[in-house]
Length: 289
Image 1 (cartoon, helix red, strand yellow):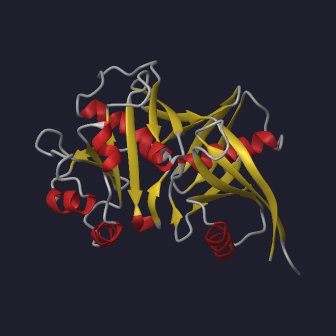
Image 2 (cartoon, helix red, strand yellow):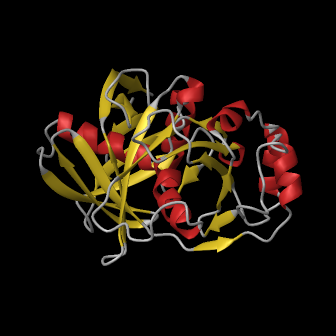
């Protein structure tokens, strides 16, 4: 018997269609893991989120790129909250939880802004071979690890400071070399390049995210990278140490013409790292298989 499954495409971290980062969203209790892999490959956006009923949280949530399942995806979670709100499965101005591979995520939605608290990462200064990474990024003129050391989080994201917004926009990586470096299991899986020079003066940082190891050469807007970036900026002394009660806005995606904006906050008293943003539905359809 054929299965009939609704699927939505939702642009997250934006309120404009065709901006931000697209995610597929499917709500089904009937899909097996192999089918989730196949649907994500067929849909072919950076991540597809699969929501189902849960006995341990309000919902289960899994994320798949076209090639692999991932432990955390911010933009597809924002898209999932938007989907649940739009379908009136949850109400606006409410809270909810997702059981995920990264633990139980606390989320909320209020006045069209969707939020999730992500695991607070551990950060350390990267002491591996930086020259081969700089070469693969074609960043010899833009990256100075002596002035700003590379920072590695325990999720495998490597954070690299770039001297200016212009230099960041000009970065043209060799994705084959980045894939080879990541596949060699040297401690990192993905590369977050960032600068504190921004397009909009009220914002605090601009970043680009490269993850060929996960089948994504460049991701338009990456919630799981933007959140820890706030802690990286604190560690490098690029923002104030006291972030309590403050909201920081980061930029991403402009170089891909997928402008996205993410709000990030960190409560030191609660050790709680939160990302938030808007979303918009651009496509609704049915899968039959």
